[in-house]
Image (cartoon, rainbow, N blue to C red):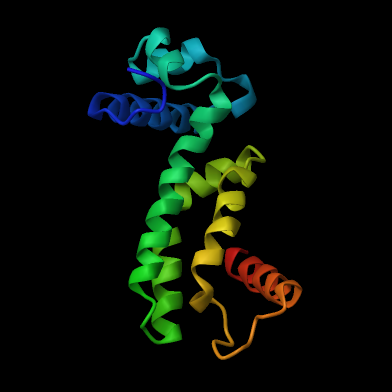
Length: 154
């Protein structure tokens, strides 16, 4: 099987490694974690690690990538809702993932999730009022996007 293929066993291994990494980060800075240590905690071989990832940074980005995909799906379900309901769903979603966000923040790694979060917002323009605005000017749109996304994220 080649790298990147979606076999159920591959997903299990990747999830074990991601959960193991965040578990280790609860007691140790990310920069001090080794691949050997991660494999021990995740109970997978180093060979399995290298079958899916080249370095720890890739494991670090794996779970946040999945979180962002779930975020997009949840927010798309809210599209027709009143803005108050959209915001409630937004904050409820991120409250569920608060522990991971805190670990990333403690390790100065919030970019791992914030960068794909910003990219995802292009698919979710209804998150940002005013809904009636004409964003034909790309610069104006991205300025508004940055302003509102920073406010919501913070």
